[in-house]
Structures are given as C-alpha cells and as structure tokens.
Length: 318
Image 1 (cartoon, rainbow, N blue to C red):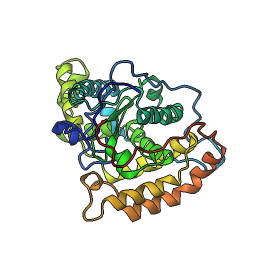
Image 2 (image 1 turned 60 degrees about the horizontal axis):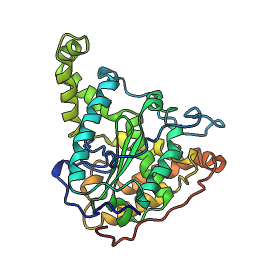
Image 3 (image 1 turned 30 degrees about the vertical axis):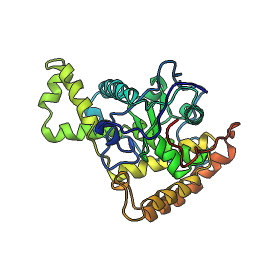
Image 4 (image 1 turned 90 degrees about the vertical axis):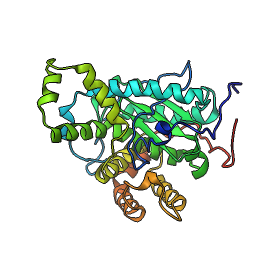
C-alpha cells in the first residue's frame, strides 16, 4: 500500500464540489473536474474489438437514435481540448488538498478494472472514443458524485462508494451512465444549442479561422463548468450505460438497486445532484422496461474474473 497521503474527507474548492455527477449526479452539470491521479496513472486504452452498439439478436440492445445535430455546431476536438484544460487545472487543485487517490489504492484499482472492461464497447456509440485517452481518478471527497468529461476522463468521489456501499455491478451502472454522457456528446450538444440561440455569426467566423479560435476554446472551458443536462439526456444516459455495462459482464438489474439506494439517501429532501434527474419511481420503471433488451447481452457476456467490495462506510482520512 502506498505511503502517499490520501484524505477521504477533503474540503475541496467550490469548483470541485459544485461539479455534479459529471453527469449523472448533480443539478449543475459541471464538467470541469476530470482529475488524473498523480504520476504514473495508466491510461485506459480501448482494447479489443467492440461490437456494433446494437449487435445481437433482433430486439436486443439499446437504440436511442442519432446524436443531436446541435453537437455539430461545435468541433468535438475543441470541446475535448477545453475539457482537458479544465482537467489539468482541477487536478492541481485536488492534489493540493491531498485528495487524489494514489495509483495503488484498492478502490481506484477497482474503478480502473471496471472501466477497462467497459471501454472496448464505447467506440460503437461514438467512433471518437477509440482515440480518447481514457483515465480514471478517485477523489477524496465525501460528496455523492461521479462524472465523465468529454474525452473519457472519469472521476468518482469517495462519498458515492462509501455512503451508498455500491457493489461492482452498481458501480458499473454509474460508470456506464457517466460514460454515456460523454459518448452521446451531451455537453457538446448543450454548447451547440447555446451558440445557436446567440446566433451563428461569431461561431462561424471562429470555425473558419476568421476569429480568435483560442478565445473560443477558452469560452468552451468556461461553459463546461456551468452546463446543465436535460432529463431526456439523463434518461438516455441510463439506457446507454446499462447497455455498456451488460456487454462488459455486469448485471444491468443493478441499475434498479442503485437508484433505490439513491432514493434512500434523498429521504428528507432530494440532494442537489438528483434535481435534474427523473424521479426515482419513473426512472426505475423505465429501467425495468429496458431490462429485457440488455439482459441477453449480459447473459452471453464473459463475466469479471475479479470482484471487489465497497470501502467501510465510516472510513475517514487515510
């Protein structure tokens, strides 16, 4: 076990705390915190040959249609570049608080193992994913939070693992959900809609090299801090995430128990991270309706050879 300090109850700067379920879990869809655990973090490349997103018998697999045309208004590489810049800045902030798990931390190893099983199926949903430098970080904050930035930067907060006592299957449901936001380019879509409402003149000149492209990239980075996703985006991410996880050998029925746990922690008032998400009963009903499409994929998929457990719920500083 590494001797590097890692605290799990860090008081992080507002920019880090405010980041909500990089997707999936906050009212404010703040995509700024794509943090990389300290030097030596292995990049999780997409290995293996992914199947088509809807490969399998007729009626199997999730089909959510084409990605929004609004996403085409903003170049994908610029969104990913802006996310990478925010990623570096937030990485430095978390490191200053000793809130980045060392590479050999058991829970970080757990997250990376699950991610490696799921990543090979990502390019079927977005061909760009085969070129992403997928990375996973564990952040020592008690918040119930997780996210995936454009470009494949995944972060889990300690609180979501410890407070919800997630099984590996439930972790895979969250990870798939977050990956789906990036693969379906929900952030790029929201930025595109924002530009469309402002008018296309400034954007068009920038994309044609007539304006300040550097300023455009900087502006994208700022927007990634304040984007919100729609409930349709959240529902889509649930379904795509289940498909990814099922193909990776994780039980999609865990999506039901996951959101039951989320409902339990929201007793006495829903946490901020759930405010843009479909209501619990509605969400669970939609998940149950989709299960027959993904359960055959899970039944045929090779199962994980390693299983992990959640951290002790009362774990504090380490």
